[in-house]
Amino acid sequence: MGTDAVTPSKSTQDLIQATRPGFPRGLRVLFVMQDEKSHAPSKKLLEDIGYEVTCAATLEKGIAALESSSASSPFDVALVEEKQAVKSCPFLAKANDAANGTTTQKVCPHAHPHAHVPPTTTTKEQRELGTRFTKLTSQCAIVLMHEEEDVGNKAYMIEAIRVGVVDVVKFPLVTQNMRTLWQHAVRKMIKVNGAATAANGAGGSGR
Image 1 (cartoon, rainbow, N blue to C red):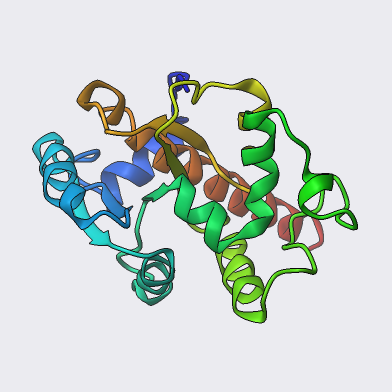
Image 2: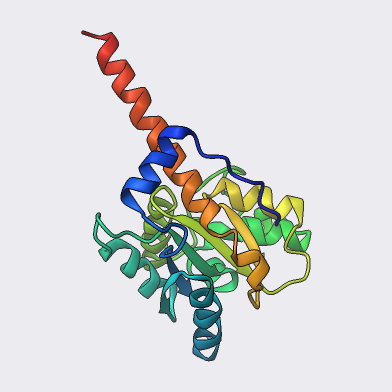
């Protein structure tokens, strides 16, 4: 999926310069892929761009890494294997169904069409993992890595975004596409900065 250019506000630019000198070098990326043979080449590709990369073989380990990262040094972007995310978090199956031309109703007849929670047929462990994954989408930019050619399928993207995913990219990774990965972190900064500004404004108006 193509990424539109990001133009940070002056306040966001000042924030980046003050807190992240040299940015986007040093972008903190988590790479989650079951096939550990892909870790080394993918890590090298990302590190050659200037990113700091941590690899995990399972979504469980990836989520644990995201949760344990310190507030002063959190991950900016998580590249997560789509097949593993769907398998571990069945509520993402709706996005997968959209790409395959099927429906969520076949997967979970009782699920609300816009529900962001796992179907009732999942295990307790899967539901807990899905809940943790959903929570992390508000803290870190989650990008799914899809091995299918049609990663830009509009229906797929709409459903993936519904559950908090910010983008879907083709795997194996391509350097040209990864050079703009930092824009997702900037969008997160803009969102957080905007929310903080709004909160300060609301607090000031009440005085």
